[in-house]
Amino acid sequence: MFWKKKEKSPPEIRTKASASGDQNYFLKITLLGDGAVGKTNLRRNYLGQGFTQDHLMTIGADFAATEKTFKFDDKIFQTTFQIWDLAGQATFSNVRGMYYKGCFGSLMVFDRTRPSSFDNIENWLKEMNKNSGRGDIPTILLGNKYDLVDTAEEVVPQEDIDALLIKLNKNAETRGFNIQYFDTSAITGLNVEPAFEALGETILRWLKVIK
View 1: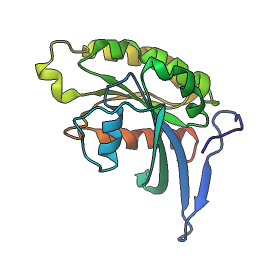
View 2 (view 1 turned 45 degrees about the horizontal axis):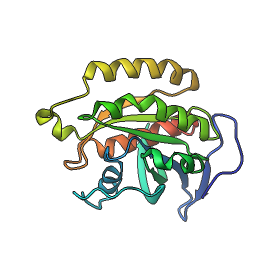
View 3 (view 1 turned 180 degrees about the vertical axis):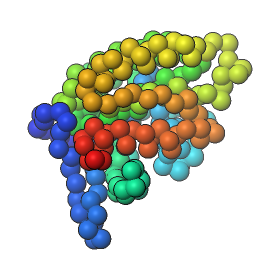
């Protein structure tokens, strides 16, 4: 589903009442980052689909949806995540724009053992914020493949990650949210669930659903 109407920030959120009378919040989110950083396996892990050793290039975009129940500030939030896994290869740069439309937030992924993927994070943010239709939107930064850090020849230094977070949050805070960082592993499941939950909470607070 694509959002056609450009809304002011923070936008109104789409909701649906359940049989019990609770509100179900529909959040379109994107998984972004260079090719082969592990976006698809992070999504598979979150959905309980397991890890695959074979890398299958996402063709433009891949879509999945899941319903989750979150508890923030002693309140229950029934949430449907619409997860758009966007291809990271430059080949697909011309078609990615349409998939950003209407998204409320993103998981921005780089490979802890591939510094070039970290260097491209700001370019990914610019592309997303340009095409979201909402301007700058909540983002969680993920350093994936943390299980390989101890044996890798190259590793993105933690001080570089911290410096980038300080830089990005100077702008994010003016938009009413904070960018958090998690080390993740799609193999071990490290911080996969907390990362998605943090994004959900950040979006709901940004939209002032959590008061």
